[in-house]
Each structure stands twice: as C-alpha cells, then as structure tokens.
Image (cartoon, rainbow, N blue to C red):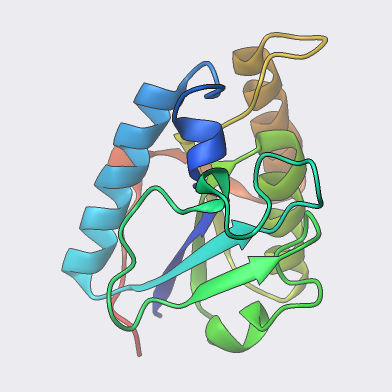
Length: 172
C-alpha cells in the first residue's frame, strides 16, 4: 500500500510574519520532518495551495500565497479555491486509489478537516498528524480548536497520530 503526504495550505501567510498562526514554529518543524521522511521513503508528496480572493493574504502571485517548503521535481502543486482540496481540482487523480493519505497543514478547522473527510469519502485511509496542523486563535485558543478538530475527525474514522508514529510507504 502506498502513501501520499498531503501538505494543505503550508503557505507564507500563515507560517511567517507578519501574522503567523500561534504554533507556527512548532508546526513548521513538524511539517518539515514529515516532508523529509516522506521523501526519504519514496512516498508521494502533494502540495496544496489556497488561492485567496482579492484582499485576502494569499492572493495568487503575492508573497503570502507562496509555499513555505521547496517543491521538488515530481511533487505536484494543486491550487484550490475551496476548503476541500479535492473540490474542483485535479487532486483525486494525483492520489492513487487505495493510497494511505497522511495530512498536515493549515487551517485545522477549515481546509485540513474538509480535505481529511473528502479523502476518507474517496476510500482512503486518512491520518491527521498531531502537531503538524494549526489554526489561529478565535472564540477558543488555537490549540483547543486543533484538539477539537482531532477529536471530531477521530470520531469520523480518521486516524490521529503523533508524527513519530507515522510511517510512509513507497509510491506504487
């Protein structure tokens, strides 16, 4: 069984100044570790990039829209305009049938959650990596929101693992 690391909205506007998520340093390190390990294992890697509307911090072509991590040859970039990264994009064709999906990125309660559930509906075993997704403070602190998302996704059948417990399988 192969696996694909989906990095959702790992963009400058959320992880670098002037307005990073509260856990930006910790999440960036966790994502960097996952990316290194996925590449070393020969797993698939797909970068998903949000394309904001006029006035948003991630309007295409602006610094906030740029991805934080280097994209290597063979690693596709999927541009999206909806929280579900599969909606209206070619993502489904980039994730082989039956592949395990390992998910990390931004924002926990929006794009990460919607993409996790969409991958699960497509028949993929989905793992959300604890500490490798984040959001902003809102009515609740960001850390509390992230834990709530994890609990909700776990209840829906998504695995939630610490990054050290995540393993990657080579692309088929």
